[in-house]
Length: 475
Image (cartoon, rainbow, N blue to C red; front, side):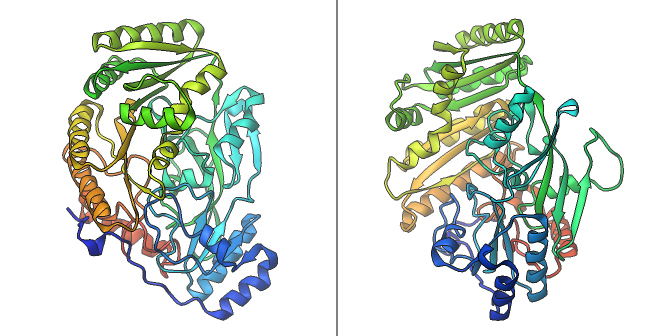
């Protein structure tokens, strides 16, 4: 494995580049009040939800309000060879936002307009600072919705940059399948467009897919065109408890292999249910639980739900609870969406070392059950949730970020988990992205040849290595 767990490797390598005073002066002259060097603002933009807390903040923050702002800021960075890191809402989990080589942060949260809704074509074009909840609020009057739901109210730009997915991916896919076109600022400060609103194209290289998941290392995304979907005529949600994780996972595998078009299928282990009950004052049965959702016509939803209930009964599933109104569904899904925050509040001051491996659905039980046994044996507190309908699951190992022994133990568990997933022909990251934390694993997964090709692309598009440097792989 290329992700060692020696103490020296448990924290990111910090190699700050010089940020010339002339550059900061030029930045302030161009942006005025839109540029801040206040320590509190810089610190806010110098950390995400990862367990890395010791990296110095960026030297300045630019609050972009237009594509022109982004282009001008990047052009100045190119002129002075200063790193630049895009910032949405700061909800990423793998150290994507950390200024490990210094530089500035470009905050795109003010670029929050929905530019065009094309209901007839089922597309929408947005600025990168639009959040997923704001987008769905904007399109619901058209009878449409955007299904990608990573849990947090992330920005569309950040979701595109990390190739996010979430709870609905089992039916609607990930950001990869749902981004049609982009506007991107290159490392030179030039504005380019990739893709169109057409459903397909054979015109040249697929630059849109190259940018989706590039984590800000190839360009700064300033506009995104997305697919939309009709709001389902009927939606039904259900929770079902199981006597063991194995029984729940075997049920999921059977549901998927039988081709039931389930929209969401989430696992929460009993330990996490207890955390959520305490945090959100819920009364959920404290057993291993599947949360499911069905979309379609009233008849098809009823048929899907009955089929899944029959399958679950074969695996000792019990305590089914159905919800058809929005209020009832929200109550059930609160357990899943609050799992992360419920967990970290059980250990004040802790951070979560998160995992997000994904394996072929047929290998899910093999990967998950051994990983649960290792986590239980370690004695380290953790939470477990999973988008198990597509073979993706998350452990969050709860650690004191300043405790070297706890960090080492969490990283050892993570290495074992990822090694197992790769051996089962899975991936080291299903949706969080590589950032800092998965860099060594990327080499194990993709191989030296593929990573060298990625480096070649990076150097061609960003020869001075100013776009979010130090992420995905070393230069």
